[in-house]
Length: 116
Image (cartoon, rainbow, N blue to C red; front, side):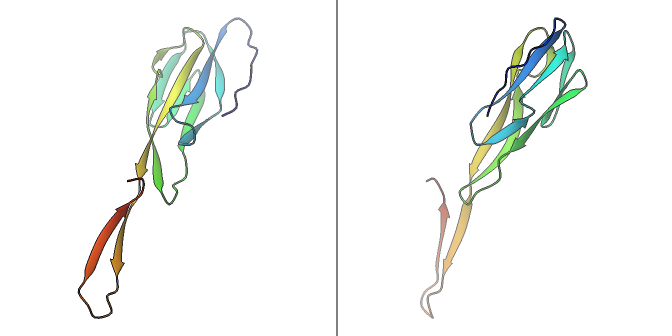
């Protein structure tokens, strides 16, 4: 994630987005300037404050893992200072079931979970 400095005149606070684990998801935009004492609310993967939003998006699934947004940290109450709001993502190892052709022999079965 790349963060940029933002100059704001007197009556604003900066809410800066972060993620709990790099590569598990992103938040856009990286920061917003909001009115002092504006209410901060969340609805699923979106934080809203002063008519602006931060949106969390989970990383695309890979062969090994599936990613999902789970919650926000420090994303409630009112904007009373510059603050960092963290999007929390989870990562789940994908599971695969394997079957073998025994060409007329005894049946075989098994499973594989990546990362174990």
